Image (cartoon, rainbow, N blue to C red; front, side, top):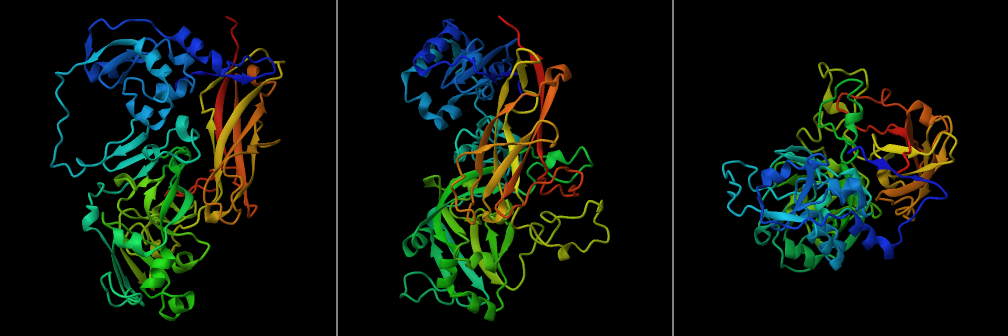
Length: 528
């Protein structure tokens, strides 16, 4: 991404031990003292390269970190995400920066001035329907801001197995609703749920209807926690567009994140509302559960998923141990483990039991339906007859190194390796059995070591699995000037990713689960 060199592994590689880290960092830090200069934020934004100087801000001060970048313990790619911007959002997430005096001391030595206090504040256009959207982390990779659509940056994707809420990918279709928790009420209606009754009656008061405040929901039902990965159906869509253009956001591989959700089980709420068993649901003709969001979106899931005692479908009010953020569905959202992101409806206001799917483009329209590669237009296609997406196929990605990262080797005969790491996930709760990695286009494979996530129940593995391996650098890579690495995952059903995106291309650009590939330049290591 920034053309930095990637260290290769070898037996004689030097390792900086923690006790020597501060000294090494100080050696790379500038000792330029602040000389009373002031900078506007616009001026800071112009300093993002070694040639211009790399500036960042923290609180009200400005720092020149140009000489420090190469020595950043977390890697060049991570610190460069803040180039020309504030580091405050990153330090809030990674609090090791504030739990020790060392980072602040290092930063103080690089101070070159202060932000201009006379700079005019940002003017908010209150006529803009997006003006009240939440503030967002600058490290996210934005495709749009109105509505917001942003992906998890590769440099931070594997920093934590559970993704911090501020770094979660964002997929919105409308402005983020502003909902007052004290005024919120969840409603339910539909087949088998005829009469709405207010909370506060006897034990059977919800039979035949439901209307609960957020506090009422918490008081009435036992809380449950579920850790799930949610992935947009268009993740990796950008990898289709070299074949033929698709319709939709050209996501890379960051439209995916993982969280620990806390809430109440949907099936328990439905049981209280009248659907006491699958037999009752079948008798009443219930085939789908529809969720209507406060922002106008509607989507539905099959009743079989909703009532499955092992399906773990939640109405969630917490995310990663904190109240659900507005960005991700406050006050209440649906979490459908193992299903495509669109079914995980945010800002749920109403639940309807029905014999038909939800209406609208996100369920019956073209938005989340897979079409044959031969379909180049929708003329003559009966879209409603095409099955909507729910569970997703097995998927994996190489997170590090990213394409374009230089690999420096001593010579063509050196026995060297490069550290490769990524994630794998499959829909429907199917665990990851294996991840294979190749440097010769799949002629031979190296099996990665599975990390966090590998111990999940293989039938309820709702979250991703991290993987890593030391991959030998091909002997001809230096002569060729580069190497390609590809990965493929196998899930608990022994389904494996297909090799080529050409065979699975579709006009909507959904489910690109072909082998993920990165291209790395290989160069001769220069002795200093």
